[in-house]
Image (cartoon, rainbow, N blue to C red; front, side):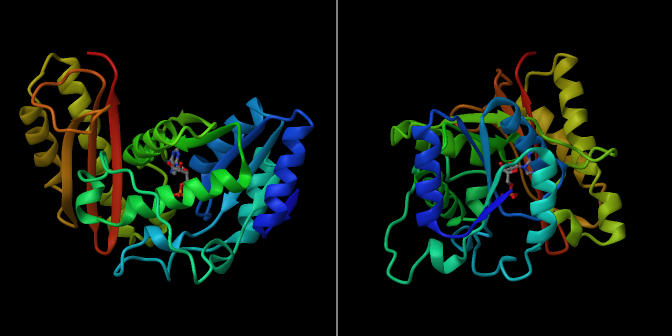
Length: 282
Ligand code: AMP
């Protein structure tokens, strides 16, 4: 297992791998790894010669009042977990290495970033696309693996890659959940025991929405009402949004017409959790 911390070394190492005909798979993360991340690493390891995992808590994707300072940092444990899931290289740069004081360039996907999480986190996606574009230039991967847990992020990155002709294939990976249905997230550790217990309502509500659609409901407003009423039974959670959108455009849809993304964000205390399901067929 190789740990690289400088851009120069990562770029030259990757260039050498590519020159030797190796396929490079890449899993960008902010660390505090859990089974969701590890499923991405396993998928990459199974389909590429070399898997690079980046561990970088990216300051530009956090808003002023968000959890940048308290975000969990567990590099040693993450390195071991990545190795056991089949990673070959950890790229763990410092914030100064990634953003020297004179950096002045951002990558901004203008469509797809306004709604859903973009409403309450207006600078978030600009930070994500900027860091992912930089990481792609540094790691030069053939394929990069992203979780559907962050469905809007996946759509935004796919758009960036298409618009900027980046020669990296984006591979979406399914959401990994705890036994009780809660989507795994590095932020789940912030939840108090009572909040953790109530947080299962997110997937319960999404599952109820799925069932309603399977039973024939096509009216998005009716599905949204059902979802919202279930979420409102969690007295510790405050809804940020519940949205039913076309999965390609991320624009709200009145009628359920696959592929449809049902996405939500709920705050438990200071912890904002997101989850979603994608309706691919009726
Ligand atoms: P993060 O460390 O939160 O930036 O996430 C890094 C990658 O792991 C992103 O592509 C996420 O979508 C993905 N990821 C996070 N949680 C999960 C999960 N529960 N299941 C699948 N992928 C996930």
